Length: 194
Image 1 (cartoon, rainbow, N blue to C red):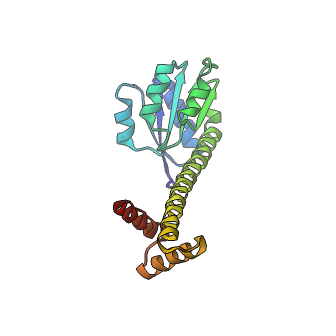
Image 2 (image 1 turned 135 degrees about the vertical axis):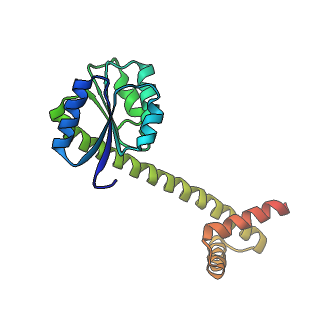
Image 3 (image 1 turned 90 degrees about the horizontal axis):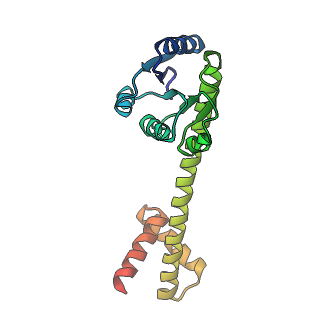
């Protein structure tokens, strides 16, 4: 995220919106935009391309939570939702939907900065975990392909596993490619020949 954060505040009450803007401006160097009408919310948020979205939802229903979640793009940016009360089990759904913060007891200007900081930190942690999960899945898939290629080489050449892997590594180095790429080519070729 850049040094100067762009924050979209979704707040229908004009006086509360002004109070929130004042609290944000006092808490840091932010470019703050207020959306006072939730119609076409997704389009309006996308047009502003904010770094963070703060939503004052009062007492949200499940439908409202789903709409606001989809509109604010919690997987793209930190989103904090402030609600008036416990809202009957919606906290779990909100977090599962990807919200970075779900704050009960409404949006209080004096709590904005700490909640904003926590939402950004949680979002960054979540993004890191997603990247690591994607990388782990990719590595696992590559490992499976390499194992299949070793099996093909072991059967075709009558060699052991270590020799098959050494052959894969040598081919990869000779061709300036990754071992997984060479393994994929071997598996694909073997599939065509059988």
